[in-house]
Image (cartoon, rainbow, N blue to C red; front, side, top):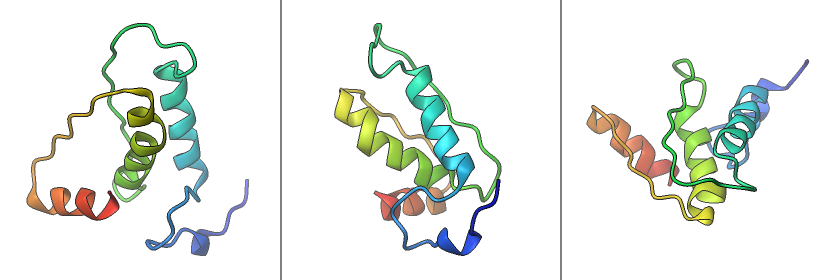
Length: 88
């Protein structure tokens, strides 16, 4: 599979990389968005620099919160709080 890395710019607000879309697809599958069965918790694990924050925030705002999920965001550094704030 080929993709243009230059299209994945920090200012872009769409998922550009195949692994980001795959993560969103798997989140939808895991949380069974079309047919939810009670509350669930989950964790997204991706390598450093792969766009975890953007991918997760994108899914949360477009799908998770829109379907009534409540979100608890935990981080261990102020830098990560700032990064999440910027993405939101």
